Image (cartoon, rainbow, N blue to C red; front, top):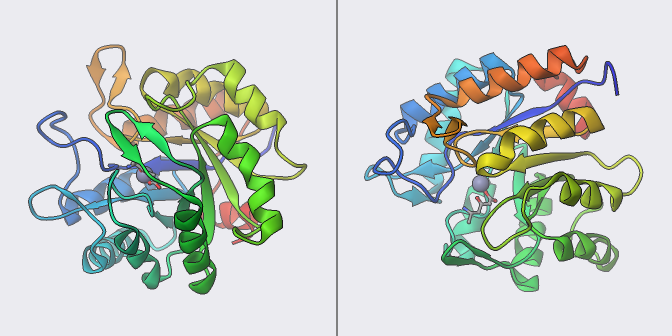
Length: 272
Ligand code: KMH
Ligand code: ZN
């Protein structure tokens, strides 16, 4: 794996936590764009993006996605922007799809229903097919979000049925209460299911983030970090920014001979 470029994705905010719980959340459009640009400067080549309304609540409002995208572009011309289609647990399907009309380079596609802590994150076959069809329609590269083993088993079946594109990136999101936990064993099991040449990354939730990051770097995979998945830089200590997480991954990668991928290299690796 030595010398293989490492794609770092930064998930800058998510939809499930707010400023009352965590004071450093970048909720305004300017704060989100600053957070994205700072993460990119630290080494992230993909920004996984959720946005908030003026009250700080998660929204799938197209105008807000457009505004944040434009503000990121004012600060950084190059970083790849990946929209959420998950939104917050409970967001209606129509709203989840609407930001795709802006034709982001990438967007997520969650591969099954699960308990997301106390909420149900609903992804029926109909929801998966509808989001995937819109991603194809708008020329958006899907990143499949895999929260559990069965979701990974579904991938080749859904590709064969023509429900989801054969060309996709995969993100193992491990450690969501209700999903698969973030053990090294679980990541190994999932990676062993991948077809030859399939690109993948891992997003470890909470305390799983750091060990899974190090393991994925060693395995030759890619990584996602950021405040959406983890608020703690070390045990009991809040991270101050997304960039802090990205910079740590970049340092580890350097020591492990995985040069951090530029956006151009990331586009080439993922075939964007
Ligand atoms: N907020 C979670 C329920 C995605 O971005 O596509 C779902 C989520 C996945 O964050
Ligand atoms: Zn997300």
